[in-house]
Length: 176
Ligand code: SF4
Image 1 (cartoon, helix red, strand yellow):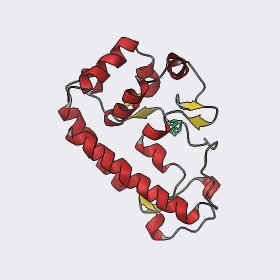
Image 2 (cartoon, rainbow, N blue to C red):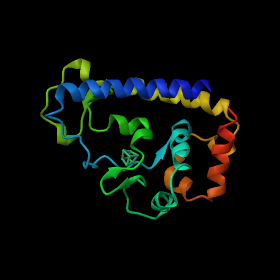
Image 3 (cartoon, rainbow, N blue to C red):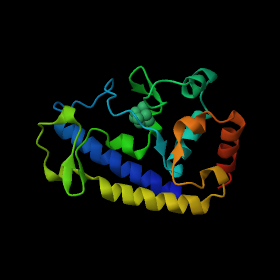
């Protein structure tokens, strides 16, 4: 599916960017395993749900129970200060903490304040979001799954829906 190919390419570009930031500023950055200050994600675009549900259906029951449980106000995928969907996490989570350009000003996690970043290590987040939104519109056109025909998916609500509904979405996606 064209939209999923574009989505993978966007992820690869963002990951390449963050790897370049880490290789240049790694020692100074506060971002590392165990820091979960940014993990308050509630909703994502439907196209971002695809790799997550494909991962979800391969998981043992013990992991599914953790995801479905009513936990605190943090993201449903945060367990013991670690992201259990790390390889398939959405776009925003891949930029968390790093310097991003929004409305012509640089935003960064307060824990990374004080680091001077050269311009090539500042991600234009508005461009990323524009690309993601366009990819998502294409995805919605490409798939005919009613529950994914929406602007955003609330993660807590989605993963508390019946298991058969989640499996049915994954099964239908295989047809594309
Ligand atoms: S998906 Fe992972 S990285 Fe993103 S907010 Fe949730 S726990 Fe944090």
